[in-house]
Length: 551
Image: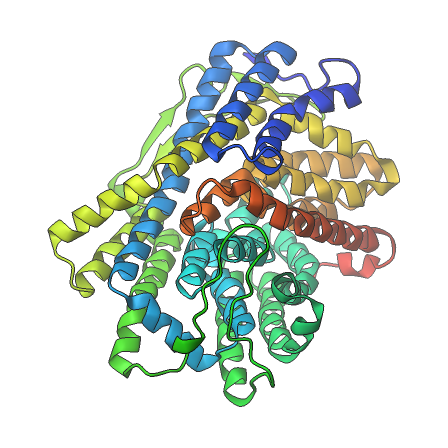
């Protein structure tokens, strides 16, 4: 048994600086020095191993097994999702279905701002609610590329859109995990998170279009943006407060898509934007103005949309707990990580009492979301006219196209798992937790930091949920507020975590430009996280009635 030490240098500032080294190496190599992502990930992994073993005294074999555990998690479930989404995308693209898809969306609106709104925010929220773990960014970025968006726009804007829905992603998995580790009531947490994120569900669509075209051109289409945001926010608030976390995004996304599509039947902008603006740096926009008129038959349009309808159906089915449990019943291997499982002990104040950390890898190929996507891709492939040989050939191409991305994600997840089991991430959280009366603000940033490091709101909640409750109780702050803020603040870190950057660059086939994507979204992530922190600070001091749990 090895016990974690959170202040190895007996100076929290110095310890936090050393603990942040792997993240700084990883993101600095990508964002500043523009090192290719898989090389940057290897450098970050080397830094994480050095910090864990030399500075924190973690036994080398434990650090190595934590890296193996993280790398395996990077391949399944995360890499498995990306591979099969790219497979489906290539199947549809090779048949020319994206041209038809583009024209069909043009029938709803030829305006690029509204197409972005519908796909990245409304449709992306559905995939986040059904599957999470990178699925919405992979799907929406691939669709935007097919519609003529530049790689930088498709990647960065998909990441910005995938924020407000993240807390209730994968049928509420982050909230369920947060309730388990914090010991707070699941429905109370769901209600509080819903209250914190509702205003941002209205703000994010405006922010998304502003990031795309600027303030003036965003104001030209403010009515449908407001419709999409309000139609999402109201169901999000009601379902999270009066039902629970499971169906929040599903109901809200369907409401947003339906209301936006209906509104655009009676309203169109006076000056439609039918071209995708080009960027000064990174990516090349493709002018598709000559092909936006709806000129395809109903059968052709149905054929173009069918693969994505099939995908949504299978992703939703694979996310239903009963279906997932049935598939796990057919085949699920729980593999304890030798030399790591129950041998690392978390210590106070991260946990109320010393607590051994489990390390069990779930080899759940059948119930993994990526398997549902693979089945959807195969069904779609046969529907589009591929034979078995053609599907195998296309799958080989998909594997080849994501080979470096899979390596990158495995290394990045290895970094995240080393920081988790060595305790360096807890050091960063404790440094922010020492801010006293300003803790509601900085505690929210702990969630943001957790997602930025681990790549998952669920992982951030598991990591810092207990710390948030302990710290809040010590400071006399409502623990429900701060535990919920960990998840609400965390969603804004989703757009800058290394895993999401690689998912976006892979989906847009723009691998090697993760640095450009990071620079595109970094300000937006920081700014939105600060706004969430200010809201939580206001809840703690100015608007205490918002802490009342609705029953």
